Length: 474
Ligand code: NAD
Ligand code: UDX
Image 1 (cartoon, helix red, strand yellow):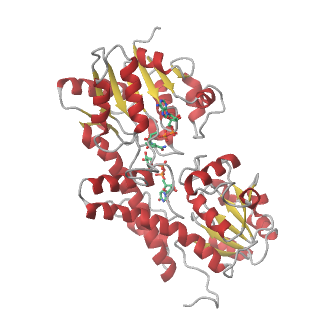
Image 2 (cartoon, helix red, strand yellow):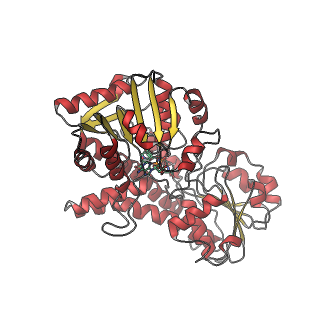
């Protein structure tokens, strides 16, 4: 072909797809091919019904697809022709065996390295894009070195910092690009090769080169710091509710201190997403296995607090609804782990819904981007709740076309994702069609509490003072 430089990316998921779409957009002189073992995933990338929902993604894909951006299952040929191979496969928490429930499984990364070693007949730069335990590059390097054709590889660490829902701007104007490699001549040359790709659109002062292990570890630590921030503000949200302080006012006051910064201080029903819990647990596991139990325990508290926040939310719901929700209809608004994504991995909505179902409530869910089948996959994965072992799950969860039908006849609304459309719903109309007293439990700080209280709702919001009734002990 006419291209002088070829990139292959193994793994066409939330990271591989958008990342490569932006590289292709910004580097029209480079041929980029994303490969995957899943034929359905690749087929979807080749239609306009992409396998993931991410604002702005389709436009960027359409700009380059068929020009210098391709999606294929022909993994061997694409590796062969590539100068640079990204590994962007999933690295989930292990569910069984050593480190179960904490350690990240890098099986898929190793399989990619084995595949590259098996088929490559020219030297390549192999780039770890997946989030991995520190020192994974060593395993990748050793597997690659087993090839019997004497092909030389360089392994780089280039973790991805995009957040879902804002992946396109995050990739187009990244806060930084981190590249780790061996501090040898060949390692530094490989780093430069990747710098040359990013330099096509990223300012040089945002491209940070470092050694491999610092790069791998920085990714875990960045997510641990972010998750810790959410757990910290969530811990304070409980204190605010107990003292009539307003958590968003506390966040505002904190945010003016430039040392603290004003981002990522929104109290919530708990953090979700495929990364935070997995990466914090991975960090905890690494600390444990390097003989640092106190450090491990410190970071583990981030998870403990998040679990507490999710549990606290449903406990409040049950308590306020006269200690019983058996047979009551609860409208769950939002199922994705945050707005502007259809991703449900580790979403707090699963925990809340599970708890509601255990109380034998009837759950009526509406999310603008999550399909019913996806919700059930998530139930099955996260808590082993599925059709077989939770009687009547199919009947107990009703999925709705919009917020109004979800709220129809409901005793309560539980807002679990901060979709913008929930801010502008016609709450009077919703109120009119609900059972009374009509409760609102806002886990995302979405609603205007005063407006809703005027309508007649009994409103509870994370981090806000609660309405006082004679039931209250204080
Ligand atoms: P994903 O599950 O959406 O996609 C992974 C893809 O890899 C799947 O389509 C799977 O079929 C494919 N795959 C698995 N094994 C393969 C193999 N041997 N060969 C070819 N393809 C294979 O995962 P994701 O969310 O894109 O995450 C990928 C990595 O990036 C993870 O390590 C994750 O921690 C990290 N990460 C994710 C995010 C995020 O927001 N999702 C952000 C930063 C980093
Ligand atoms: C995160 C990191 O932000 C990103 O850099 C990394 O590459 C992948 O992991 P993501 O999980 O996609 O990204 O979304 P993020 O915006 O970080 O939100 C994670 C969770 O925290 C969501 O459930 C979100 O609702 C919650 N959150 C975030 C809060 O509850 N409060 C906040 O103030 C911010």
